[in-house]
Image 1 (cartoon, rainbow, N blue to C red):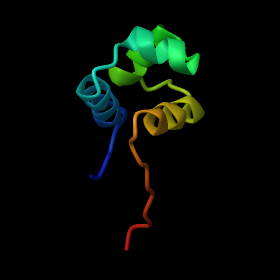
Image 2 (image 1 turned 90 degrees about the vertical axis):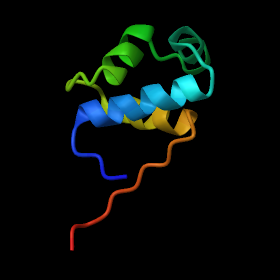
Image 3 (image 1 turned 90 degrees about the horizontal axis):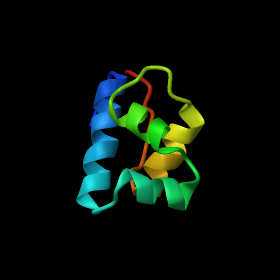
Image 4 (image 1 turned 135 degrees about the vertical axis):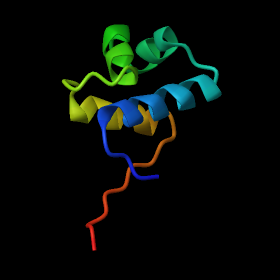
Amino acid sequence: MKITNVEQFGGIVKNQRKKLGYTQKYICEVSGISTSYISDLENGKATIELGKAIYLANLLGIDLELNERG
């Protein structure tokens, strides 16, 4: 799936979290990432930290791949 903005990325993270049956609080407890950060990410806030976003995606079983446009 091609992601072109933070809202799409946040929506994917949120959908996967819910699919797995996890609450934001549970993810906070497991990862040490604050619930406010998780909420901001899921709601498409543009000022998220990329490292945390990648870590959270991996924690939820989401693979990220970057491809050069051809």
